[in-house]
Structures are given as C-alpha cells and as structure tokens.
Figure 1 (cartoon, one colour):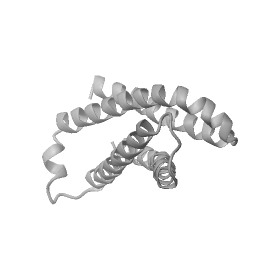
Figure 2 (cartoon, one colour):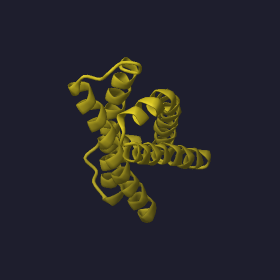
Figure 3 (cartoon, one colour):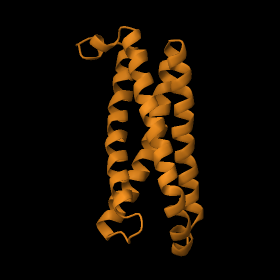
Figure 4 (tube, helix red, strand yellow):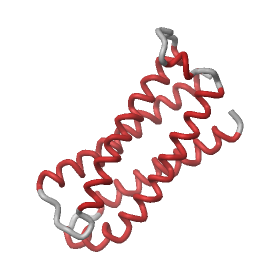
Length: 148
C-alpha cells in the first residue's frame, strides 16, 4: 500500500474534517444574515478544497484496490468479509459523489443569489446526506482496517 494509504488517510481527514466544520458552522449560524455573510466567502474555498480531497480519495482508493489485486474480484461473484465491506463502502462513496455533484452545482449556481425552495431542499438535503454517509463510510473503513 505504501504512499497510497497515507495519502488516502490525509485526504479522508480533510474531507471528513471539513464536513464536520461546515456542519458545526451551519448549526451555529442560525441567523440568515450570518449565513449570508459567511457562506459566500468560505463556500467556494471549501468547495475547491473538498473537491481536491475527493479527487485524492478516489485516486488513492483506486490505486490501493488495484495494487492489491481486488479490482477484478470486486466485479465477480466472490463474497467474503473484506470484499463485501469494500463493496458497501464503494457503493456509499458513489452515492456521496453524486450528492457532492448535486450540492456543488446548486451552490455554484446560487452563490450570490437567493435559492429557490427546491434548491434549498436539494442543497441542504445533499449536504446532510454527504455528512451522514461520511460517517458510515468511515465505519466501513474501520471495519476493513480491523479485518486486514
């Protein structure tokens, strides 16, 4: 695994740590005026930072799967504790990726505009989904680490 696991861990810390920060920020900024003052300034910076972390996570995860000969096994009928946990983790990562794209598109479209109720629903819903699924992915990462 070498460098890939280290890169993966640093990117995971950045990704999940950033999600925790933004979640706490969202909870603590209850007034609309406060949110309007903060989010347009830190949102784009956070978005680029998190996009970089996600790209590193996807790349380093692929490298680790490929280097350990698991790529072909993932798409086979083989089942065992490691492969099943890895498949679940990857399904969740795919959902997180889609939610991230939805959230970023809405955020970029409405950066200096007022969101429609539907945009608010999808933006906040995708953000909460990303946050919660991150915790589940973290759980499966720990399960895999325990097994290995």
